[in-house]
Image (cartoon, rainbow, N blue to C red; front, side):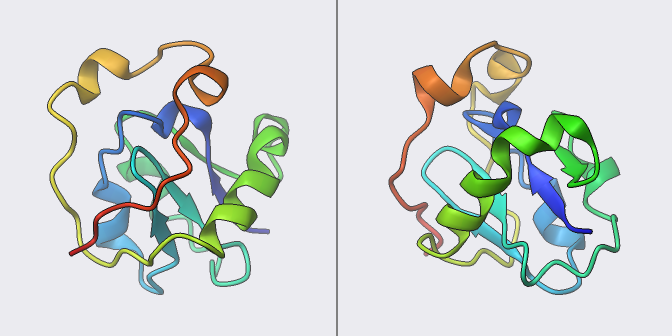
Length: 112
Protein backbone atom coordinates (compact mmCIF):
# COMPACT_ATOMS: atom_id res chain seq x y z
CA UNK A 1 0.00 0.00 0.00
CA UNK A 2 1.04 3.58 -0.67
CA UNK A 3 -0.63 6.95 -0.44
CA UNK A 4 -1.51 9.15 -3.41
CA UNK A 5 -2.37 12.79 -3.92
CA UNK A 6 -5.77 13.41 -5.50
CA UNK A 7 -6.76 16.07 -8.01
CA UNK A 8 -8.20 18.33 -5.30
CA UNK A 9 -4.58 19.30 -4.50
CA UNK A 10 -4.43 21.16 -7.82
CA UNK A 11 -4.31 24.91 -7.20
CA UNK A 12 -4.68 24.31 -3.43
CA UNK A 13 -1.20 22.87 -2.77
CA UNK A 14 -1.30 23.53 0.97
CA UNK A 15 1.91 21.55 1.63
CA UNK A 16 1.14 20.68 5.29
CA UNK A 17 1.77 17.05 4.29
CA UNK A 18 5.37 17.75 3.33
CA UNK A 19 6.36 18.77 6.85
CA UNK A 20 5.27 15.50 8.44
CA UNK A 21 6.58 13.03 5.85
CA UNK A 22 9.43 11.03 7.44
CA UNK A 23 10.84 9.86 4.09
CA UNK A 24 10.47 12.98 1.92
CA UNK A 25 8.45 11.25 -0.79
CA UNK A 26 6.59 14.36 -2.03
CA UNK A 27 7.37 15.96 -5.38
CA UNK A 28 6.33 19.42 -6.43
CA UNK A 29 4.63 20.56 -9.58
CA UNK A 30 3.71 24.14 -10.36
CA UNK A 31 0.25 23.78 -8.86
CA UNK A 32 0.10 20.41 -7.07
CA UNK A 33 2.12 17.83 -5.19
CA UNK A 34 2.43 14.09 -5.82
CA UNK A 35 3.73 11.15 -3.78
CA UNK A 36 6.33 8.78 -5.21
CA UNK A 37 4.79 5.33 -4.70
CA UNK A 38 8.17 3.58 -4.52
CA UNK A 39 9.35 5.86 -1.71
CA UNK A 40 6.21 6.08 0.43
CA UNK A 41 6.46 3.85 3.51
CA UNK A 42 2.70 3.79 4.05
CA UNK A 43 2.83 5.47 7.44
CA UNK A 44 -0.23 7.61 6.70
CA UNK A 45 0.83 10.66 8.70
CA UNK A 46 0.29 12.91 5.66
CA UNK A 47 -3.37 12.04 5.13
CA UNK A 48 -4.88 13.84 8.16
CA UNK A 49 -2.60 16.86 7.62
CA UNK A 50 -4.10 17.78 4.24
CA UNK A 51 -6.70 20.57 4.59
CA UNK A 52 -8.05 19.70 1.12
CA UNK A 53 -8.46 16.01 2.02
CA UNK A 54 -6.49 15.28 -1.14
CA UNK A 55 -4.46 12.30 0.11
CA UNK A 56 -5.76 8.74 0.28
CA UNK A 57 -4.30 5.24 0.48
CA UNK A 58 -4.08 3.44 -2.85
CA UNK A 59 -6.57 0.89 -1.53
CA UNK A 60 -9.33 3.52 -1.63
CA UNK A 61 -11.28 3.31 -4.93
CA UNK A 62 -11.10 7.12 -5.28
CA UNK A 63 -7.32 6.87 -5.64
CA UNK A 64 -7.35 4.71 -8.78
CA UNK A 65 -7.76 7.67 -11.12
CA UNK A 66 -4.52 9.33 -9.96
CA UNK A 67 -2.15 6.41 -9.32
CA UNK A 68 -0.40 6.78 -12.67
CA UNK A 69 -0.35 10.58 -12.37
CA UNK A 70 1.49 10.37 -9.02
CA UNK A 71 4.06 7.90 -10.36
CA UNK A 72 4.66 9.74 -13.63
CA UNK A 73 5.19 13.20 -12.16
CA UNK A 74 7.14 12.02 -9.11
CA UNK A 75 9.72 10.71 -11.57
CA UNK A 76 9.93 14.12 -13.28
CA UNK A 77 9.26 16.88 -10.74
CA UNK A 78 11.71 17.98 -8.01
CA UNK A 79 11.55 16.55 -4.53
CA UNK A 80 10.14 18.86 -1.86
CA UNK A 81 11.16 18.45 1.76
CA UNK A 82 9.93 21.65 3.39
CA UNK A 83 6.58 23.34 3.47
CA UNK A 84 6.38 26.43 1.29
CA UNK A 85 3.75 29.13 0.93
CA UNK A 86 0.34 27.92 -0.12
CA UNK A 87 -1.24 29.83 -3.00
CA UNK A 88 -3.08 32.96 -1.85
CA UNK A 89 -6.31 31.65 -3.38
CA UNK A 90 -5.93 28.04 -2.19
CA UNK A 91 -9.09 28.07 -0.08
CA UNK A 92 -11.13 29.28 -3.07
CA UNK A 93 -9.96 26.30 -5.15
CA UNK A 94 -10.65 23.68 -2.50
CA UNK A 95 -13.42 21.43 -3.78
CA UNK A 96 -13.63 22.84 -7.32
CA UNK A 97 -14.62 20.11 -9.78
CA UNK A 98 -12.68 18.98 -12.86
CA UNK A 99 -9.37 20.47 -11.77
CA UNK A 100 -7.32 17.72 -13.41
CA UNK A 101 -8.68 18.36 -16.88
CA UNK A 102 -9.10 22.13 -16.55
CA UNK A 103 -6.21 23.35 -14.36
CA UNK A 104 -3.42 20.77 -14.11
CA UNK A 105 0.05 22.08 -14.94
CA UNK A 106 2.86 19.70 -15.92
CA UNK A 107 5.49 22.32 -15.10
CA UNK A 108 7.79 21.58 -12.15
CA UNK A 109 7.44 23.48 -8.92
CA UNK A 110 9.86 26.08 -7.66
CA UNK A 111 11.51 24.38 -4.70
CA UNK A 112 14.30 26.93 -4.53
